[in-house]
Amino acid sequence: MLASGVRYHGKRSRRPPRATTRAAAPIRRFPAVAMLLRPRLSLLRAVAPHPVSPRASLPVRRTLSAAVGTASAGDAAPPAPAPRAGPKGGRRSAPPRGPSVNPALFFPPGVERDAAVAAEMVIPASNIVVGPYAGDSRVKEAEFVKSSARARDCPKDDRPEFAVLGRSNVGKSSLINALIRRKEAALTSKKPGKTQTINHFLVNKSWYLVDLPGYGFAAASQSAQTDWSSFTKGYFLNRDTLVGVLLLVDASIPPQKIDLDCANWLGRNNIGLTFVFTKCDKSKKGKGGRPEENIKEFQETISSLYPEPPPWIMTSSVTGLGRDGLLLHMSQLRNYWDNEATISS
Ligand SMILES: Nc1nc2c(ncn2[C@@H]2O[C@H](COP(=O)(O)OP(=O)(O)OP(=O)(O)O)[C@@H](O)[C@H]2O)c(=O)[nH]1
Ligand SMILES: [Mg+2]
Image 1 (cartoon, rainbow, N blue to C red):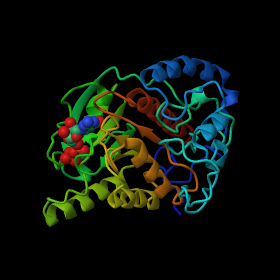
Image 2 (image 1 turned 60 degrees about the horizontal axis):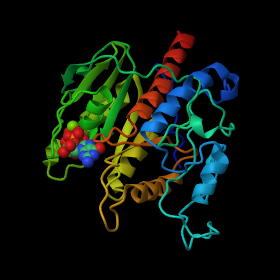
Image 3 (image 1 turned 45 degrees about the vertical axis):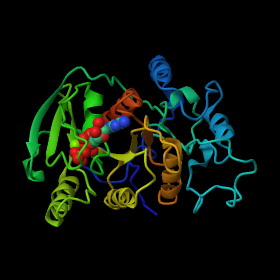
Image 4 (image 1 turned 120 degrees about the vertical axis):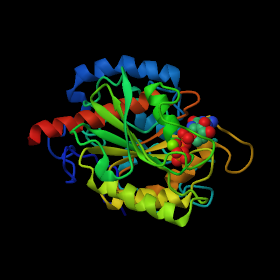
């Protein structure tokens, strides 16, 4: 089981997070924050309806468990081994009511695990609870700053950054364009292997989004694949300003082992990640063609690896699904990171 991978850290630190032990402020201690966030979440919900349940007025615990018929939000604690719920799994008393996703919640820094969370405090199309560190998440300006061929050539300032990682063609560059609302800031292509360097985009002059080369491009030469692992892994292992990784997973196809391997590698190296499911607008008939089913299968596969559910969110760069929610999630991780920096300096 991975000891981490869902944890987020303060500046220049790979130490275990203090959010749940030190200053663990339950969300109810921040009524002002909660009130400020509610209108924003309602707005998000209007754009992207929650995939799990429309009964938003019920507490999450009841709403989600009722919709899915398996674990409740309170079951976010160490997952049961091999939680492959299904007709033979013995965990469901009633037949499944159609595709839905694993409801276990991700509690961000500042929110006690198992805190009672109202449905409106969960980002739509995700399992992410909004906590007291969430703040202004609007992108007011964004600019391409630098393309680096080696990790040591990356910008050397202290700004926090999020790395966008995933298989070739999963939609990394497209997601960056969607987040910053620029059509071709990051170059995209139908052909895998488009992005070959580490690309820094500066947002609001205060933080970076980093577009990376994809992994798992079978057509790439052996030497190109080796290059990927040495230079991108070098980036991850040496980047002190890395707040977290957005690990993109293509929801329009069944789970791929290489994505699980990548998640494992990040977890082993104590690098916090958020699973970002891409291409959720694409649905094909037949087995493995429906995003909700693929996401559910992926979550069932990874849940036994994590002591706490990792954050995940559904997105589409075509429809904009998940865009605002993901920015809000990043704002809370970033603000926590900044806050830790202030405390430790
Ligand atoms: N339908 C749909 N297509 C998408 C989405 N995101 C990306 N695509 C398409 O997928 C293809 C690959 O997108 P990119 O953003 O270039 O993927 P990438 O992960 O950056 O690829 P590499 O740079 O090669 O690693 C392009 O044809 C995109 O238009 C999405 O959310 N929905
Ligand atoms: Mg790319």
